[in-house]
Image (cartoon, rainbow, N blue to C red; front, top):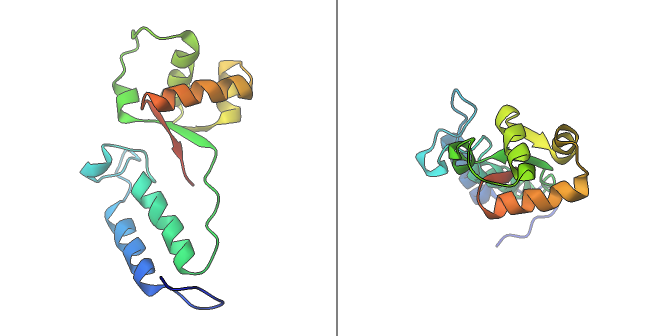
Length: 135
């Protein structure tokens, strides 16, 4: 592993990151066009990781992951009549209408506190219905 100082650039890591970013592009619906991503909102996990790798390769500290959430493909496939607590359904409904949203925006829309919402987000994430958006 190359130690980066000053103006040194890790060329191999930067090239790998660029290749990933070149293949993981947003499609017309704003979702990654790669089959491996299963319709994740763009930037998908590989694209977000490649962005962080590119920043590291240039010797910069990557930006902290955003505090935004998005619904996953299984979340989109959950029928609106599925039996679940109202607090979970409210969050899924909000993320269905707003492709990505911050914790504060979701809490405001669902009329709840951000502390209570974090537990709900953790539960939905555990079931694979939502994911954190990095960037």
